[in-house]
Image (cartoon, rainbow, N blue to C red; front, side):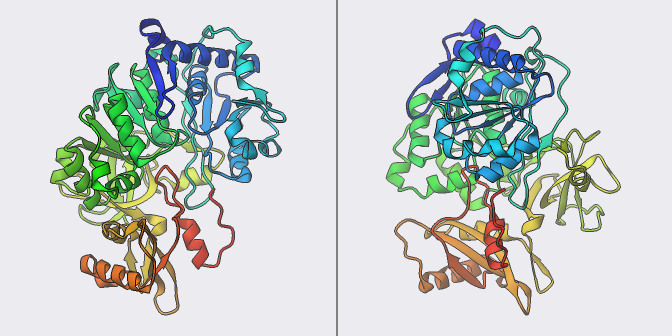
Length: 517
């Protein structure tokens, strides 16, 4: 299913609504405009397997670009709107996009991208134009709103968030069927596992360049539901949107939960959330205490999954499962789990190591980086692949995430996982956000440091640092506790919930190339 189906059956139904302005794109409009852009792609010489890119804020036009690519058999790369020109230019060049669609809102960076991508021959801009960009609206107006003679299914080629280095393009093979012949994996999950249908109203509070809101928004539209797109996450606006638009499904990252829970209670409880049936979360581990508070507030509607854009495996945890296995990210619904030590030997339940998913065959590669593709695979089992996360499996087969392998602190020869410390400290009411890293230490090799963003109205000083370290010692073994605390105005966390911990570490390890790439 895709917009072409719903344009025939429910043409005036909203496919997407802007949560703040209330502006709507109907299924008829979405179908017509994505057809026009698909016709433009064809006229510019793009054929099945070619690449296009989008560099845009959360804009209603974003969905036209998505469906134009997906109904043309093309690869679509979404570029993080917060990147510098060099960072965005690297992705644009690396993915090989022949067409870029941007917006006037991002004109400062968009105007610098041509120098990085000489192979990109068509530049379109929404809501205005600048040098070497054509007006998107005028350009598609020259083409008929008719589907291409053939509509092979396209695919996303997304890039890793680059929290530990250069982002990697995740390339999966194109399907052999047409766009109208199959729901697609996420849309099928939404329908079969989470009950999405034509009556579903989905709140998308995160940036559309990120894999989860991108896939889930289009999955809702494949099922004929309505997407309520927030231009950016705001605690009050999120709750207002659930009430105003009678939202049934939503997706979040744990930092959004934390920010909503730290709101004054009278604000938090001021909205009618009775339409809300299912709240999904992923992208980062959720502290147990935060999730318990969400259950207390929203009831047993909070679901969790764990996986990557690679689609090399997936776990799922429903509300009752989580309450029986608190802290878990669930059991696998795609792939078989294996936990391995640093020598690649498989570990028994309860022991912590690198998480691998086993599939009959690996269905992704890192674009133009065969060595990184190979590094993700188990040396003895090439159909096992890892995303770099550390965790363990309990006796019942439930997976628990410990941390990223690259974030582990080795202090005095002992492995310390920052996530455990962060999960405990975030529960303190004077902390808005916290990151724990290893910093150089002559005696121990690394020492544990907490970098804290204080809550609104709280003064950061030495007394507070001592209070927070004492708090940590109440809940964590002393050898894991921070030896020092630094305060910052804001941690380098993007709206996707991803914390660019490498930027923090580089500051303390004397590295100067601290770009978000």
